[in-house]
Image (tube, rainbow, N blue to C red; front, side, top):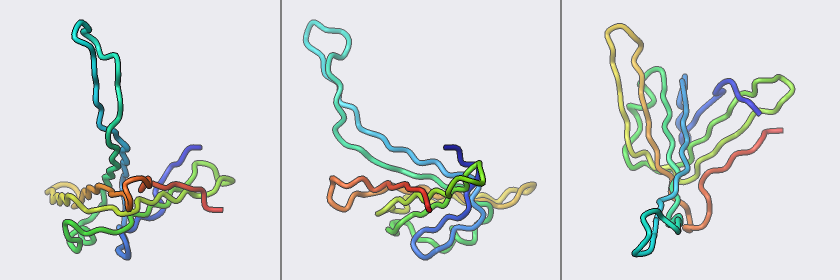
Amino acid sequence: MRYQGIVSATFGLTELPLPLSVRIVRQGQVMQACGDDEFFSTNVQLTKASVSAEIRLRGTSAAECLQLGQCDTLSLTLKPASADQPQRLVQLEGAVLASVELAYDQSAPACAVLRFVAESSDGLTDPLDAEDQI
C-alpha cells in the first residue's frame, strides 16, 4: 500500500507539528567470516539489530522543548494514497532522542531534525510496530 502524507507525529505527549518527512531504518550489525584460503565471505550473520528514526519538522518550537536522552514512544499516523484505505499507525517504542538539529535560514522557514534510536524493553522485542487503523 502507498502512503502520501504524514497526518500527525508525537513523541510521548509532545505533538511534533508540521512533519515534512520521516525515515525509519532497521539495521543489523554484520559479522562476516571466511576461511584461511578464502577471499570472499562464506558466512554472514547478523549479531545485533537496531532501529533508528529521523523526523524533519517545519518550525523549531516543539524541538526546542525536548531534552536529549528523553525516552518515550514516537508515534506517526500516515495518510494512505487512496481514500478507501485505512490510515497506518507506526510506533517506535522506547525511542531515545539522540540528536536535535535546528536550522534558521535567511531565505527559508526554520526547521528541525530529530534523530531517535530505539531500545528494546527486553532485548528480544522489536520496538517498531506498524498497523492499519480500522
